[in-house]
Image 1 (cartoon, one colour):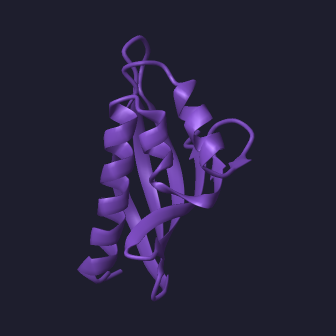
Image 2 (cartoon, helix red, strand yellow):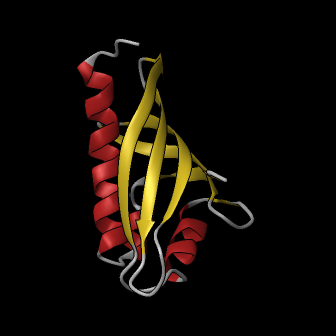
Length: 123
């Protein structure tokens, strides 16, 4: 599939901001990459909104890192981009965990944010 670079750039901008905050263990900054009403599904029950995202990442161990690889991108509307990724979460005390991640990003004003985030295990 050929994807316009602008869609990939949109995802990279959002996901680089997210990964940087994850790596720095800054849960509130992670949450700021999400819309106010984001649906968030990590590896435990889902939440809605930034508070749930912040709580999820606050509970993650220090030293957690996130490295992603974009697999597919689709522009669904002028202000909506869908991404499908493979993400490796690294830990200091155990082997890395690689998962699949689907994100739906939305333009809110002049910034792109994650409106839906869903992780699934590879195994």
